[in-house]
Amino acid sequence: MLSIKKSFSIKYIYSAALLFFIIFTGSYSFIGSLRFIEFTLPLIILILLIFNRGIIPFGSNHKIFLIFILSILFFGLYQLNSNSLYAIRLINSLLTCGTMYYLACSQNLFYLYPKYFFIITVCLYSLGIYTYFWEYTYIFSLLLAPLVYSKNYFFALLNVAFLLLIGQRTSILNIGFIVYAIFLNGKLSYARFFGFLIIIISIFLSFSYLDIRALNAFKEISFKDLYLAITSAIDIAGYYSYEEFVFGDGREVLTDGGDLSLHLRFKKWGHAIASSDLYSLFFGLGSGYFGKAADSGWIRLFFEYGLLVFSIFISIIIKLIKLANPLQRLIIGIFIISNMFLDILYSPLLMGFTGIMLGLSRSLNKNVYR
Image (cartoon, rainbow, N blue to C red):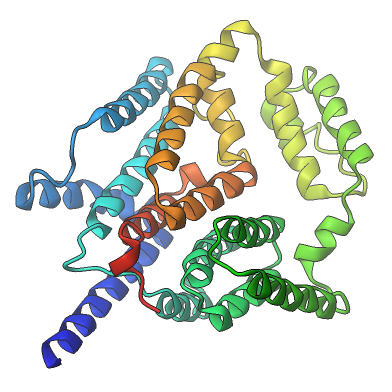
């Protein structure tokens, strides 16, 4: 009994240390915008390969992943300018995700402790560790999945309240997806589902008396205005360079009232559509076309690298979904939704955290502690 408790405590310490590692190294820069995780990643991969050469299997799925990375590298080096660094950043994020996944799969060292991870992450958020608020929105969304799956409803509701207070639309979509997906998979009974739904509705109603950005943002959406915004952006974009249209002389276009956040996204995406032709449809506009952010990882991947590279990545996601267990599918679903409006793919912190959560969720029966 004593040895079991000792093993439990050691694995908890190691798991907490892994969580601290990815958040700290992913949040702070080493030189310029180079994060510590990007600097330490090659060393981690080397250590993993030295101590366990078989830790990274080379099956058909891994060959597709390698082809995808080599394609990104080819297109990045093909243009060979300052924007090529964005291709390196994307490759680094993908390698971080894969490396953290295989590291977290070691059940002798790491286990998934949803409520403790949530408490640790709240403490780090309170200390102001994270660089951008959308980073911890995604992290807390990922943490919500194992909390609900393992029926830690009290901490799950705390997480929901926390996400609403942070105030991003994406978190609302993720909350809805998690509840809906788990209900469809039969992990919640009808009574529990409706009870959970009533509590969430009560939270929403109580927040309606407060100025909560996540809820107010949905109230401001007008589909007619959004349609006019994107079509206007496409029509006007051809008269400006990307920088001028988004940040310079064209900045006054589409920003008078309405949802400014979505309008800025539509300006970026509209310029990409206006700049595209048959060649760029298949081979992209070039890495770094959107600069620091496209506000959508999917949009960025498609327009910067084209349909061919985009299709390879989609095939990887489809294969992962087929191989994943129910909890891993929840995590992948949150990644897919969040990547629609955030540059998740280009963040080593968030891709590394995604890899950790997928690795820790690999064995559901033994690897999820309440």
